[in-house]
Image (tube, helix red, strand yellow):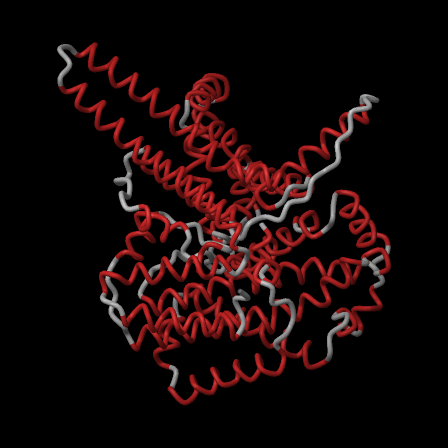
Length: 527
């Protein structure tokens, strides 16, 4: 079911109507049914994967809790401290083993479907290098809708229950409603059961104010997606698909344009699903915080896809850095290089796992891994050389809070983010080096004299719409960054506000178009 379509609009209206028509205690059932209907449109057979992941994590979470309770009772009846310690150690071992098995089972379908071809291709490559005759054909499977997202939601829930962060849900239908919540299943945000799950299960009354807020946000999201992302995507896709026949100026424009496009696309999606959830009274976590106003790469990733970063932080970074190996490395580094390195080394070690996972999550290709490691290299360099940077700034009399320095840092980070995306926009490392060569040796600066030529395949009206859209996005983000956006909206006269809404609708009606397929229309749905 295309998210931006009359089909989804009708589906959304019916869902909202039923949601507030039924008794409040039964509202979650409406969401559960809507989840199934929505998911069935992508292929009812794929529900099998979703149900398997749901059942495994639901049952295993109950078992983890049950074993923990048994351990508590046994420890309470133990005769001595040593017996209590032994009981607790045995229970912990069993729970760790059970949790590990559950994670493997939950992530198994996602790993097999998404990464089997990547694994086979690399084994074939190694086989060729060693002159072996072993070769196997790669496989091509269609990924079930949202499998990357609901798998991570399920694993996060399982680990939270293992850590006793909250009690396991005992009603499977309620747990399934959280896991399959249709606004977040395609592209996130990555949600936690103790927040989104509880919000879904709460009772909500209809609110006219929430309806207006939700609809205005949906409209803004549709505008960013259809007018900015889709239209800009025409030029970017054309150039990157045939980059050999374009000069470096076009390629550089495509890479910078890609950064704008993916932000308009992804944040537009988030505006739509958060707006829809606002109407229902359900709280979805925010996924962006003006990322292109970041001063460093590290800060950028704290502002971009926020919930994914927090997921890796909670379930990868902390377990690795605070685990046995990480702490041993910390002690060793403290002895050899001092207290500062003792603190930094475990983090460095954990970040290798985080960025390996981040790269491979975005795509089963070496170019994504290289992209992840380059981001890691920049972040580690910044952390390691922070004292050196401060010393240089002091010698040059640079004030960190001056607007000139802040603007320089913002632009520097934006350019660096765009350049790193050379790896993620190409079809491989070979394409990356070929495009980079064109940028440096076949730039053709003459094109810049007539910038409209860079917008390949786009009409003047579409170019105008994109430029206006980008300007509006910058303005809104600037107000949000300064903390004045809510004040501006409140003080804005109703007539002017309605004129803006009408203008956005007009732009959408005149310029909207492009891919509307649910699993391809939004870029992050492919991850």
